[in-house]
Length: 284
Image (cartoon, rainbow, N blue to C red; front, side, top):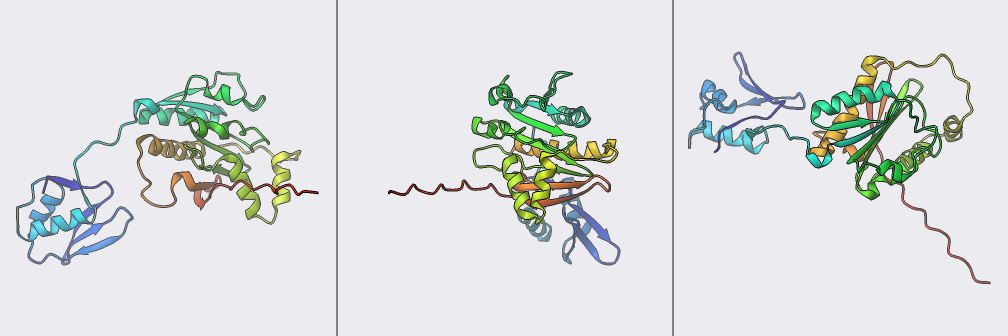
């Protein structure tokens, strides 16, 4: 067996009077029954300080850890590939600024829209969004999405460009699924699914299209903006490095709802909306 170490998030602890226990990445505790294995030797092997002996009880337990996925060969974290580093950011600076900082820290090369530009004022065409050949486009709105604003951006996956977005509706924010290929969930799919899931679909549609009277404006706090940026950066980083989500729904099939008052995040599965077949014409 090659020299190994515990995978990130997994710990082995010595419990007084009860031997060893494993704390899994999900936060669960599992007892390790190894009456014939020397505890200190086993701990040294599991943490990578010493290689496992070729046979014996310690070798058997270490092999069981490796088979269960708790050991991994020592390696560096995945690096952001050069061909996916160019990320174009559109939208409101209260969200794009912290997102740009987080993406840069992960190894991407984010570029924001020039100061003074407002893509919402004149929805861009697909050619505008593809200008500069970005690997991904992220659009962040500190408010509801106007009708038709993201229509052109929904076509980005057809051109091999990843498409990610978020927006705020009052004290609720939504981080939509990342779309990276034809057939992935688009913004139009999310709107259709949300309308279908609520009995207040007429009211929700009216809220999106306006006009509406609102109270004092909701101000995104620094922690709330950082949380939304972190969720977006994590999704984009997993796409760029082809890293799977450890749990929950896949990023390309997941709508996340964020309560901005409590910073609580809930996940909801979402699928593309199939194209409705047209009714064939009738003769006569």
